[in-house]
Length: 154
Image (cartoon, rainbow, N blue to C red; front, side, top):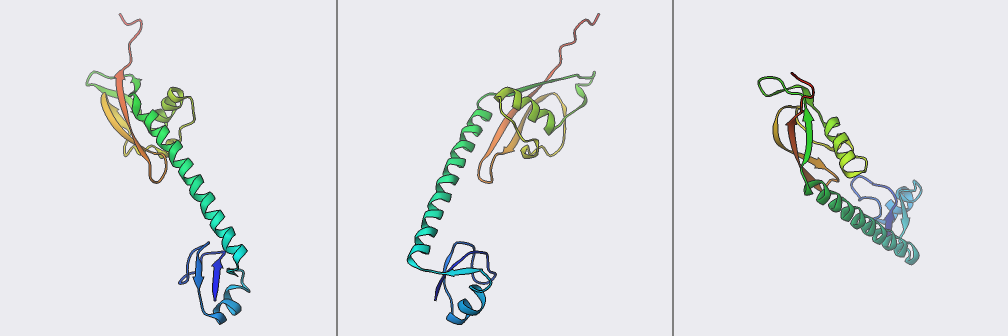
């Protein structure tokens, strides 16, 4: 008997899949527990439409993620920080600082949890920081840490 799974069933399949299962398994287990529905013409058409809509939505999300990645990699992000005598920063630059600067630079909210900074930045220089936009799209941000100009010293 052909059925359309409405929920993931271990050992049988995932939600939305059309499976050919034993008649008794479908009638006595899957259908009464609302884990599957019989695969009729209308139900199959509904599954196809749902899959097409999901693919279209995924493609649109991927396109917007790639556009954001292009904007992130287009120009380096410059952060200024107070620096000691040895070229080490007072404090450090964290993913929250980077996200705040990117948000101001791009004019849209940037999630600091998606910035994959393994440890805070404590020195001057140029750094390449990965930013995971989606599971499939990652942008590498060029980050320049520069000395903050000292005003009124002297």
